[in-house]
Length: 207
Image (tube, rainbow, N blue to C red; front, top):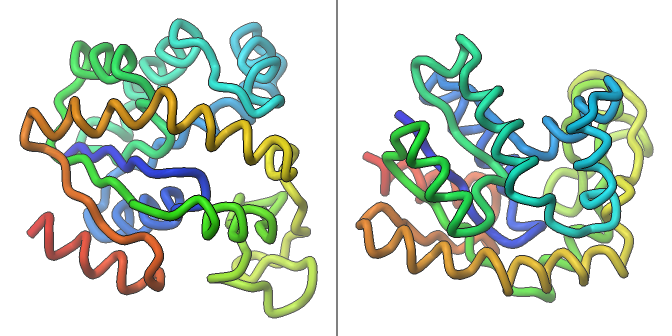
């Protein structure tokens, strides 16, 4: 089973993708994680991606497509995957369909006000990458609930960059909803609910 999770920043794409990964025993592929790892390694594509992504802007399709293709070619994606953060444009979706089959697309619908509130309080674990915030607050301030790693505020979660990312989303990503709806693959879920309520609804939709 190959799934795409769409939604405005702060909608909980990573959280729901992780739950889908565990439930269906498939791989969770997150473009944000790919960008961070490639930048950490100092790869040419990683550095180029960071020059855009680090400012809150969408990374050019050519760069993102190449990184995603490499990731989906890994052996752990053979039995299925859930994509989080990709595709973000119709051209990216068309490229994705040229290299893989997509079975379901989940749109996590969220208001801009709630998205900004969630992102402004969000912190990520420096070790395991687990996100903490309003829905999943740390039990100990600054410490990850899962592995005990140190929490940090991501560079792209500043108020100015959040607004840039949301504007980019509305401009370039929303047309994806029409694209996937026309194929009969799109399912919309209210992401303003609790994490468990959202997952239960997704699970019921996917059967």
